[in-house]
Image 1: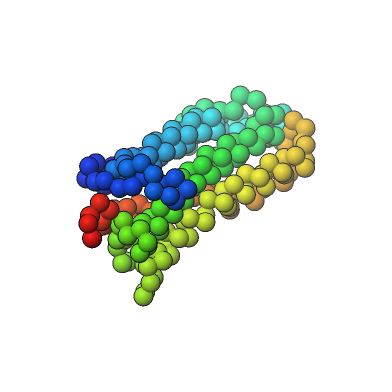
Image 2: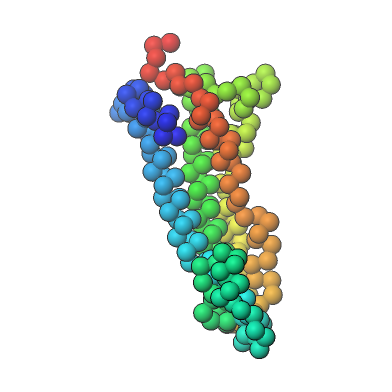
Length: 212
C-alpha cells in the first residue's frame, strides 16, 4: 500500500462525495487514507491482545484448584503475558470475545471499503486501475475474490450482535456458565480477505490521471 501510494504521490485523481466528482486529490493521498485506517487497526489488535492474553489455568469451575498447576511457568511457556488475577472473572466473563470481534469487525469494514474501491476503479465507468487477470473471473472483470471481500464485513458485525445477545439472554452470575460464547470461534474473522486485497493493490496498474 505504501509503495503504490509513494509511486503515485503526484498522480492526480478526482475526489468523490456520494460518487459525485468533488475536489481534486492525488491517488497517493487517497491510498494513504487506508494506510491510516490499517495503522489504527493494528494498534487495536495490539491493545486487544494486551487485555486478553492472560492464562485462566487453575481457575477450575469458579474457586481455583488445590492442584499445583504452575500457572506462571505455564503462562511463560505458552506465551501469555500474565495469569488471570481472579478465578471468578476468568471463568465467567466473555468480554475478551467481544473485544476481539469488535476489533476484527472494524478491520473487516476497512478491507471491505478498499475492496469496493478496487472494484469501482476497475470498471469501464471509472477506469482508474487495471487489476491483474489472475484475480478476475475468466471472461469477466468482476474481480470475484475482491467482490467477496466487499460483503464479508457484515459477518463480523453479526458475530458481535450474536455474542452480545447471548450474554443478555443468560445474564449469568459471576461464575462459570456453559454456553456463554460457545460457537463464536468458528465464525470469528480470520483476515481471509487481506491476501486478496493486498495482491490486488500490488498488481494494480494505475491509469488514473492519464488522458486515455
